Image (tube, rainbow, N blue to C red; front, side, top):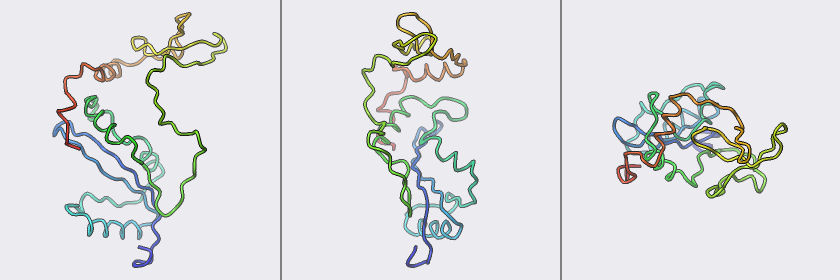
Length: 191
């Protein structure tokens, strides 16, 4: 674009994948925030020319507000649709497909580099609890208790946050149980 259109593309690309409950299929797609309307229009024109099956109707180019940019950073998949939780097995397929992928990619600029050790992709399975100081209770081992929906002090039984989930949220958490009716094979090969 710089050479042929005289436009420098400066953008942020985001990968997202959603699940359509009614059709029982996956929708991997990109969101892209570009600096300047001319660059965005040139990119759309090139995308349509290079991508077989791409529809001009699906390529939304419009000014982007600060709120819309914040929305871009919220998730790479939705956990609910139409107010109902998405089946845990479908989410597992998305999480497995997205694992190790770069969900954000700067284009035309260099993103800040994180310090070594800031990587949060480590394995957390097998963790018994989290040590968390609480001044009024002293240092304690806090263990997650699903029934309490909170971290519980393993010695005193005190809860850490006192959070009371809504009935709707509890139903969502229950839908994530291993007893979910759909199997992973049901969604195999659809992403």
